[in-house]
Length: 598
Image 1: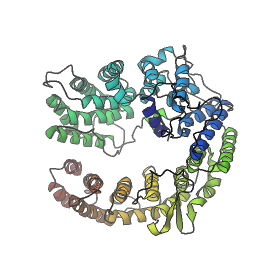
Image 2: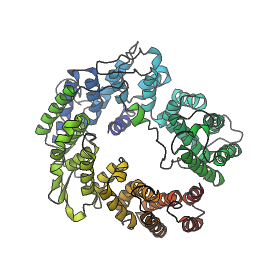
Image 3: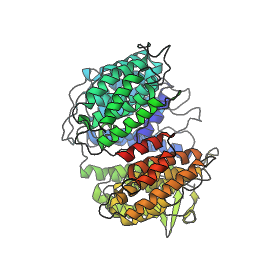
Image 4: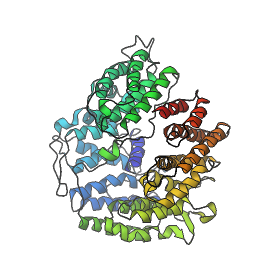
């Protein structure tokens, strides 16, 4: 949620000068609580000011920082009002002033500021070397350590700089990105810059690419190829592997167009000859197969280059993937943990807000905050009360707040897994007749906005929760039974239904992998039935036309890949191989045929 709020803030900050205000617009962060004349927005603004006051008197720097990080999510959208309070611009000006300090006191509060500032002019100097004027990290009383390196200042600044601005709008930013991408060794930093690399690679080269060595795209690839070779022969490392996979996919997408096809082909063929078994992947479960699959996709792209290539996507991982945000930038930098007493005090404040708030938008924000602050024991005790407003006998209530409650309840790690799976199944299996009409009484009236007629929000919330918890499938037979029935069924008609099936596809594949594994609980006959049902669904998608065609095609491509991944273990290698051979002009089928041989 923090990143969604950050993107919204960024879009506005790029169009406005920090600290600027429109004539007549009330102050947002200081003075009297602002009002815009819309009840829900005014309620959100008042909540934001109370939260800001709570941050100021928080019992510890850690509690204060966490509350401050949530504030941008409380800035309402009142852009249709001329006198809209300029909350984001005021926060940008406040943060900018603090970030210009010299020395820059590196603490949990500075991390919070870096996570909420989105003015590129403030961030660029920090991205270029902000740690040079930062102190060593000052541990707070609730931070056991170890303290992070000062380089985290630079990395957080880089993470908030938009790739398009770096590459297109600021010569200094473009130079910074190019220099780091060509010469940098820090795999984490290079992952942060991958969006800028993608933008540079998609620029059209000037003249003959083979001679345009000064152009950004060709020069990047020429620098990357020897670097990739060194990393492949280097020690096993999750972060370096993530960088290699992304860059190898980019090499396949762009090398032929940018004049380095022969050199790229030599590298890709080396990976394929080793079947991904190189020093970089040693000891990392699933890594060799992931590397080999990306290399086969890169070889296909070298053989059939596209004139206007899209960004390269990585296939679903078998490895334990390094996630830039969840595993690093969103994590507590020094292992901070809020004491139970402080967390419960925060929960009491949020309970008081929920008792008084009327509108869905601020109530949802408070419910989401509760999900972040509830200690495990308290979360377990409150679970039934949290979901009670969602359920009405055998029916499911539908409203903005009900959807928030579903999302938060399914994320509560302190609650016994079986209880959350029961709720998940209840939501996944709810039929349209069991889902009540949407209650909009808590929503602010906005005549121009309305819910799509074909929306399936309850099923989508549940599907996304399952996608984050695929391990539940291994441990819950009732969930496997529901998934098996759906995996065997045709993809339902309609764009929104197809979108939900697309979200569920990783869960279907987890089920197929389990049944094809031969391990405990596996049913090989179920694996074979699913493989054959998916071949039928692919034939149906190939004949489909209309609005849902694109999504159906994406599901078909994912299922083609799954046939190659699991068809052999399901005992259908010949049948699947013949099916894929009929589609040898399709990229997904080519890669699937390769997987069938591994």
